[in-house]
Each structure stands twice: as C-alpha cells, then as structure tokens.
Length: 101
Image (cartoon, rainbow, N blue to C red):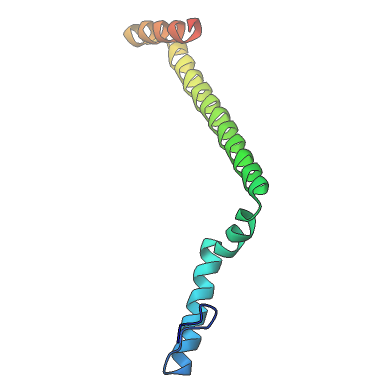
C-alpha cells in the first residue's frame, strides 16, 4: 500500500489540518510558487521574462549611475565656484580628468 501523492497530510486533529493548509497557502502566496510553476512550463515565456528583467536592470543601473555621477560633478563644480584656494585646484584637476576620459 503506497502513499497517494495527491492526498493531503493526514493529521489527527481537523484544526491542525486547517492550520497546516492555511500555512501552505500563505507560503505559496508569499513566494509565488504557483505562478512560477505555471510560467516555467512555457520555456519561451520564461526566457522572455528573464530578458525583460535583464533589460530593466541594465537600464536602471545606467540611469541611476548617470544621475549619481551627474550630481557628484555638479556638487564639485559648486565647491570650485566657492574658490577655496587648495581645494579648488585639486577639484579642477579631478574634473579635467573626468571630462578627458
């Protein structure tokens, strides 16, 4: 006599069975197991989703890096405009190196 893989886990108490079923549903919902299993059956759909995710990450990285670098350069230019003797010369050299590369 084998165990039926489609049958639910048999517990002695109906309350425990209900709690276990609720816990399983919460885990499935939080990790998206069911949705992933449906998508993973279609390999081309899974491939397309991964391509879109990669493009979104690449664009986010490029735009975010450009924005942060632009803000840093803007802040350095403002410090240079203050005309602090030693610091201004150092920052001007740094900005020239950035612009030349």
